[in-house]
Length: 425
Ligand code: ADP
Ligand code: MG
Image 1 (tube, protein in one colour):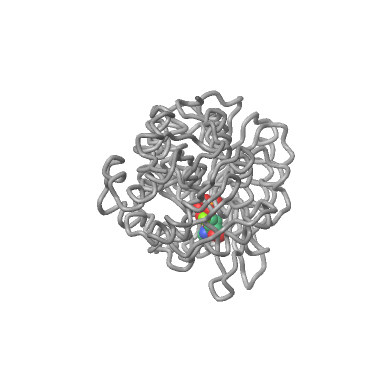
Image 2 (cartoon, rainbow, N blue to C red; image 1 turned 135 degrees about the vertical axis):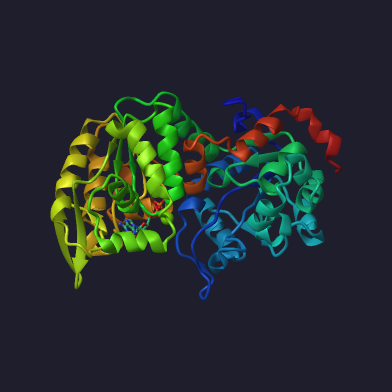
């Protein structure tokens, strides 16, 4: 047991049927029926390999997209092809989640074989809108269709979907009520890494918070400052613009209009409160950059033209941040320093990210765009740790208990012999 959760070391796998929930959710090119990225599938491979090597009959469950983000709601068929290629063995796939066809396919599995079921979110109770509206307990989730149909066919439940650990859905939290459970290797690694940062970070511990997910950034900042986890916070992106305005500094009317339009004006007050309590530890930019006809311009705050929209930190700020990062023993980053997607506003993000790659301290990074920036600058191998889970990481670092961790602790206490309670051969 690690953190009160079983690991794969504790499951006798040979000949057993294992329901293994992964997070394979990726950007999809719907027209071509292809995945635009496969990094989460790659990250899931070690656990699947271990299940195969142990002689388990492996049933993989995964979601792709959801109701509210319709653009990437899709079947898991392309994932099965990628899995087959990465594993060097056929991963069977079936156009069904927990109906008769899926159940027949599970029963037909031989030891060492792998089957990927279709998108679990084709089942209503797996949808995030359903989760938010009904808020089922884990016991109630266990009574829904998917756990009721699939648990009787399996011996164990393994969850390796750390990136979905903040979701409260039956395939993530309900199956642990019915089957002896364990976490997979990716879950173990990701949870272990971020727990060690929260518990005993090597100091100085610096958080770099930028980007545009303001509510998340503010909550994270408040938690890591009030719990004494962060020694210093370097701000960038929209987060910095809000703090600067709250502190009475110039950021340009364009920045204020954007903040207003995005509905973030309420955060000025929160920013003032944070500055009041933790002002010494929150570092704000001293210069900002904007663009004119696609050309980068920058100025110190006092000299900023009235109407500009700041899209990056300036060179002076970046140079100050470089010094802080080089001295740090732990660096955590979420959210870019500016609109790094455009060449004229990528300087701040590129400089800070390159310094993270270079510093001796342990560096951790999470969030979709933050990872995209790391890939863009070719720094993936040089970061200490890249967390596959944006939402889960943020919830964890915000001090919330992750629903899947709670459920896994429960399922880790179900005795392994409980398999026979259910399993009908
Ligand atoms: P992550 O995905 O790493 O968690 P976010 O989604 O919070 O990061 O933020 C990334 C987005 O923020 C990018 O699309 C980037 O263009 C945008 N962004 C960064 N700085 C600014 C800024 N000053 N003004 C507007 N958008 C910004
Ligand atoms: Mg993002």
